[in-house]
Every structure is written in C-alpha cells, then in structure tokens.
Image (cartoon, rainbow, N blue to C red; front, side):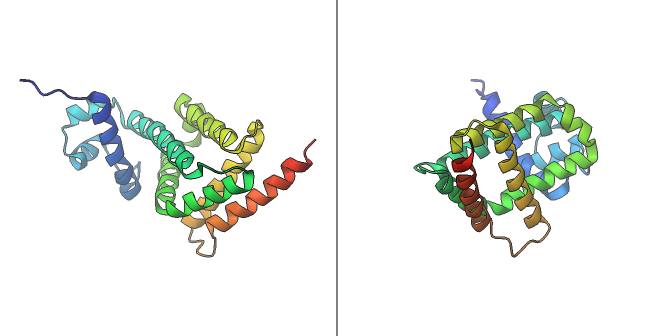
Length: 190
C-alpha cells in the first residue's frame, strides 16, 4: 500500500527545520544542496517543494508570520487594555527572545544578500508586513495603521538592540512603558 503523505504538513516540517539552519549559517552561505543535506532529503525533493532558495525563504517568512501572530494572540488572551496587552507582549517577547533575535538575524542576512529592493518589491514580504500590522491593530483595538507600524518598528528596534548585545534592555519593561505611553496618547487623541 503506498504511503499517504500530507504534502502541506511535510512542507511545513521542512520549513521549520530551515529556520534554525538559516539562523546558524545565514541565507547567503547556504546552497539548496546544503539545505537538502541538512534536512536529510534529496535535492529533488527540496526543489519539488521549493523551486528556489528565495522561494523557500519567502515561504518560511510566511509560515513564521502565521506562527508569531497565533502565539502572540494566545499570550495576550484575556488582556483588556492597551497597557495590559503591551505588558503581555513584552512578556511574550522576553520568553521568546532567542527566537526573535534569530528571526531578526535571518531577515537582516537575507536583506544584505538579496538587497532591500527585493524585500520592498516582494509581494510575500508586503503581505507579511500587512499581516503583522493588522494583528497589532486587532491586538490593541486600534484602527490606525501608522500607529501599528510605529509599534512594530519599536519592537523591531528592541530586538535589534538585544541582537547587538543590549543586556541592559528589559523587553517586558520597555513594552510596559510603551503601553503606558500609548494609553496616554490614545486618551488625548482627538
């Protein structure tokens, strides 16, 4: 009897293993052959699921965004106010600090290797950016995409600072402070 394979699930499993590989080696340093060897699959199998390294990476970023939003939503469940939500976000970031540092590393490495124009013109990266922006609006109960972009930029900056060795930066404390500032801003906004 032939083995029944859930191709979508198998693709997701391959992508999950690629995250650590990209974080360890970097996008530019890996070839599809090396990726296949590290995943213990043939290059033919890898190319069957991902026609190029860039497509593989873009699908990884799509998958990561879904996982991030789902995990963050679970962490923020039960929060009532912007301050509570931002405090929960800070705890979530702190609990997953290494993951987010690695995620930032692979995105910076990809950008350096492919060029920022690739990210700017990629429908995948634009879709992921909008997904995160919508999630922030939904989490905080706001409608302002500019404010959502500001919050995402703030979080990205915190993670970059941690990547650069910012041992004195407390992610939970910084997000709680932003929550207090956002509450005041939203109260005074006409």
